[in-house]
Length: 192
Ligand SMILES: CC(C)(COP(=O)(O)OP(=O)(O)OC[C@H]1O[C@@H](n2cnc3c(N)ncnc32)[C@H](O)[C@@H]1OP(=O)(O)O)[C@@H](O)C(=O)NCCC(=O)NCCS
Image 1 (cartoon, rainbow, N blue to C red):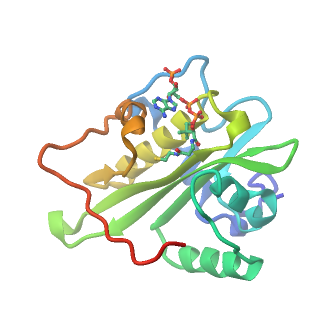
Image 2: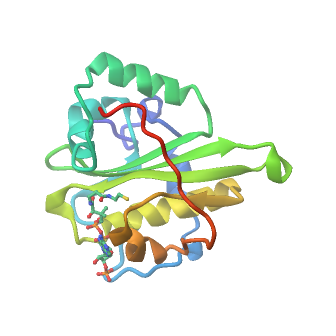
């Protein structure tokens, strides 16, 4: 198991201390009952993505979000290493069910370095997913909240995400809002 408790920090995509030291007084949402990064729920453990999560169902979890395709262990590890080699850029947070040793929730924050805004950076929240049997336990909320606070703490001047119409209400609880006159445009090169 990829475990911070076991001290295998090298396995983590980023330093777990960053996650556990976040200031949740900045949260814009409420929890009932209380959940937190250190205590996301009974039998659950929140931590950075680890290299060994390939064996803990991470790809199968992502397939509940979108098409994933056949990804071999080598491809996964190569991508993990590529992300790891870009410090302060990729923050993938997961929630693990300790009993089953499966990753049951995940969210990504990507930091883009900019020249504008006095060489500031912006955050993009991506790939929020909670496994269907674990939904409705505030885990999605906790994942997004965590990434929002993290992006603010890193010093991003803004954070954004793309979502379908039916998700707008869900995301608005984190202070995210549609901006008038702004459009999201996209051109797809491949249907994979
Ligand atoms: C969206 C998703 C991550 C939510 O995870 P979850 O753990 O079930 O969500 P939570 O339990 O934290 O929900 C928190 C609140 O958001 C609400 N909510 C959840 N999904 C919602 C939706 N699609 N639209 C509006 N509100 C929603 C819940 O009703 C709950 O409200 P409450 O606090 O007033 O009771 C999960 O449904 C999922 O993985 N869906 C498939 C992948 C997906 O669509 N990801 C988002 C891509 S943009």
